Image 1 (cartoon, helix red, strand yellow):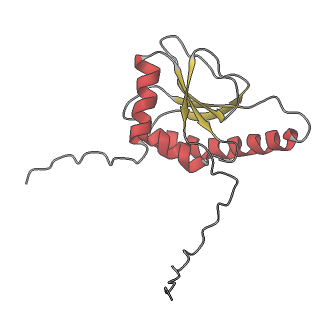
Image 2 (tube, rainbow, N blue to C red):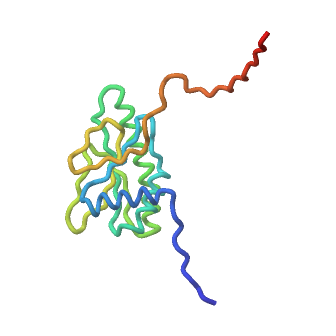
Length: 165
């Protein structure tokens, strides 16, 4: 019996992971995932992206969540983001310990530019409209939102037949 090692399963996020690795390692910039304000990334997304990145990088992986300075109503949003980061870090720590890697999410005011031989592999993410530093390159995760005009689906009208009389 020939025992062949099965190839690792291909993740749906593998193409994104390859782009992120290319930007970081070959072009020397920090990749930043940019989402519309109406889209939030969940813990499962970061777990799956980490799994897709791990075959390509040997360093620990850190996600820098770039937030605007909170004021007024956005204080609640800031508190919510910090709570989500704590929950996500618990899950990422478990995944990281399973594969002997350090995985984490940090809320930051500026996307990091890692350097040195023991550097972490940093992937930034933020909402659309946040200014990025010169060493960061945006990866848009969504196109333009749907137009605000009539976006409801309607049943097509039946063609009326007119008789010529």
